[in-house]
Length: 160
Image 1 (tube, rainbow, N blue to C red):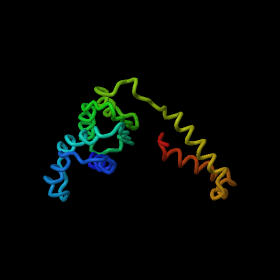
Image 2: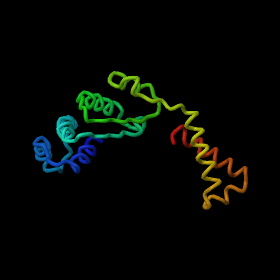
Image 3: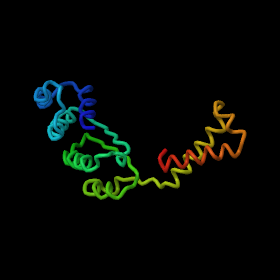
Image 4: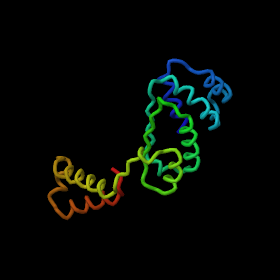
């Protein structure tokens, strides 16, 4: 994930910092993956070139390497770059909350209640079933329509 972020930043960068050049060379000119600690060293150098850098990390709860992710995020938070704006999304899971609470202030979090999200999803599904001409054939039979709604709602599990 950090390699992708660095790549995206470099594509928009007006100059390549010496640390990035050195990292590229030490990785056999991009033939080997650089170590995480090296990426964590050069990324803030690149970020400092921007007036604002907005980073969106979606679905933290779906990351299979959570501890590595949490360690990386703690390092990123330690950069304390005024130009870096970070938005993270996740389902409410205790291990993520406990990892993030040391550097994410409570006032900077927004908790979406699942029942509210579920109602929004249900309204959206109902609207699409009634308005979309491609789905009109499913709208005629109330039982089929209800089965579709139920299946989509169960599959969504609070995620829009």
